[in-house]
Length: 163
Image (tube, rainbow, N blue to C red; front, side):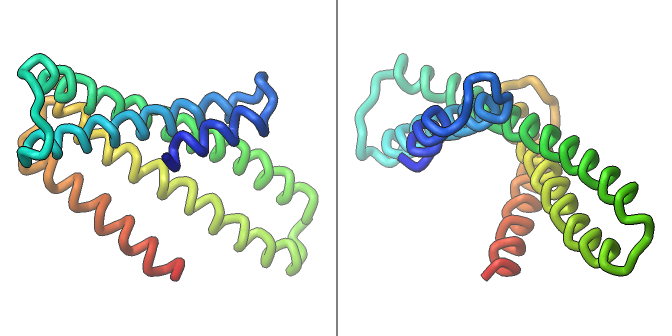
């Protein structure tokens, strides 16, 4: 429901020619569809929901594709944000001319850039999982597990920092 809410707010709040609008919609749509399909798979695997083999194949085929779709749009959004960040960084350097006040502002600005780069790195590492499930990326199951562990620990670390 959260992803649908994000999509509806984005549609209502941003102009059609804004590329960020379509990145947000792609990310939320892909990740929302993946979570829905994954939840249905879990319900079927635990005997709560009875599905025919065709339905199980449908879920297992499309779930990782939706996940990869959402993560791809998230990576695009992060790249777009990094580009905007770099433009602001260059403009601030030219405008500041080396003052102390500018250096303090620049530190805060660099933290923002590191956060964006961190999100991009996490999404790229996470992308290993659905790509390997689809057979598009040939890696060992141990490597896939390691990638999932890294991004999970990284996410928990970020949550603890923010609380």
